[in-house]
Length: 491
Image (cartoon, rainbow, N blue to C red):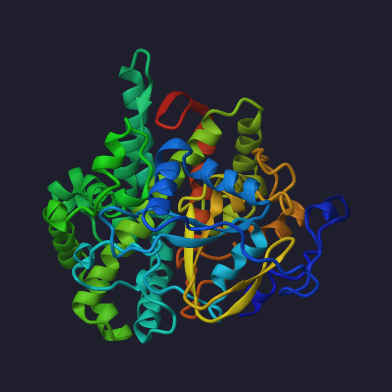
């Protein structure tokens, strides 16, 4: 695991950036050893109090930030929801890791176990995944993990030849529809969230499954909505919604929703994958030793949770970042998109667009699609943060809140600010070692021996292509997190 070990030594930045990183040895070395501050409070009452702070009184970012300030430490004990009263089998106790150095331990598979910790100690019913424990819930020590991970990486590798053509053709449809909506709008602009999700679903179905949703009108029209409902019911106990309190606490965060509420949606998508994605499923059986059911339900999860869910969160952040900018960024992006990469967009051509890639990375830094990462200590070990060392006991659940980790002032200069060119040139390349959004660093390589997202590079390149396409089609765009209010087409 050479890339994991490289996260902890001193990072050599250009002279102008030397102050960004506190020099420290690989593990604890000469750092002062501290007892982990914080507590879990009284049984039931402590977790309930923290839950109300997390969802209601403080909200997640403030929840972690206030405790970090209180304990004067980026490592501390606290509780994260879900918890009492109706999650009696879920232990909310965690050790929070809120700086880049401590956070990197979540990826060291010699020290931590990733079994059943996708969303902490809580795990949605396996009924949501066809009564199959899919790969994302498996630790690398489990034989099945290797099969599923290699299957996932093979799907992405084989889809690469059609990825860009399908992206471009589906973007044509998406933006044609946005322009049509704008032509009919008088004041509010064109809402793009559901059209964007319809685009994402169609694009991913064609590339990952080799399946065209248009062959099944019901799926083409409502497949994205089916996945939305399936995702929502699994994650509601862990996600702040922002509706009227205490209704949110009573109805959304107090119990796990039963699968039967979305069983019809799941079965519809399942049958679509089974019939239209036969070649992919067969390859999972013949080349990777999966049963048909294992291949089917893992493929469903990869399509619905990893890919569709991730892009549905990330792309609106990217659109808002660009469409709401008033600093002249669009002019620079337009110039780079048109002056580089030749006439046809491709994975290789977009790699020539340094600023566009940096904007994608910076958006991921400030708005990671998955804000929380978890792992359980595989054994006793000593963890080091940016300024201290702490003893972790076997079985303790570690929790990293990426939104704050990616604003670590020891690594990122002016960390709260959006800097479009942060990841450009030599300094930017070094900072990619500390860009965590994919269950690993941006410089890491997904493999069967780690838990890094199999589609890490596809995500960043696809997002870069999305931006490059946008500024080859338009001179400018205006909008926010949900609507496009104006576009100026290129002449």
